[in-house]
Length: 270
Ligand code: ADP
Image (cartoon, rainbow, N blue to C red; front, side, top):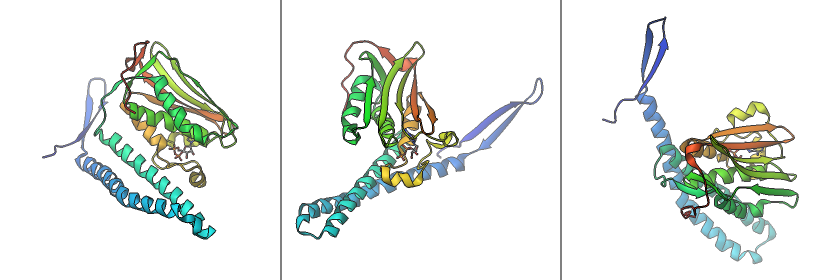
């Protein structure tokens, strides 16, 4: 009753004949749907117990002055880990929503500078003195899409540029638009990435250096989120990197999603 899913492929057999291959992929499709539902349900169910744990930890923290130092350290550690777990759950839920195309907000016109300004505010606390974060975003640039999704994608790229530049360095956030496309890019002079890992970066939970993950505090889902957000916006991710010299992540948007003007953009929803 849910229909049949077929994969059809045609190949030129000889000059005048074609071969048509038809494959029934209904079972594969159902299994994939079960996987997506499981991840979405499990993430949702984990939220409630975590909220309770966080609540008690906050109470414990308020009275921690009278506790031995080892227990105070334990509370700080547990609080950090529960923050991490919360971020992981939020990222999994966002990925599930993006994959299922469910509950997406309607696309609207947004001012790119507004999006970036919010990111600038939220990443401020992560910056060290040795970082130099610069923005070059024309005030007239407008982008058609979902504010929250674009915010997640762009902020993941800026956060990564900061995280993977542990010794500081220049980070440039730019918007450039031409006749055929608009490009949002984040360039850093940080650790860089070995070229053989670049094709795998947008896989869920893929990390170049597994050990580094626990120190930098990422979830390993950031670039998977970027990939899915860009898919929804008909955009493409380009990654250029040189180990030891830094990386540039660029998002290429098609012309029909761009506008250059000074008409006030529709109010953003965050
Ligand atoms: P994470 O939460 O681990 O940062 P992401 O999906 O955002 O997960 O990134 C996947 C991996 O790609 C990271 O663990 C890191 O190894 C690598 N990476 C991402 N951005 C950068 C960057 N700007 N510089 C160097 N490595 C990066």
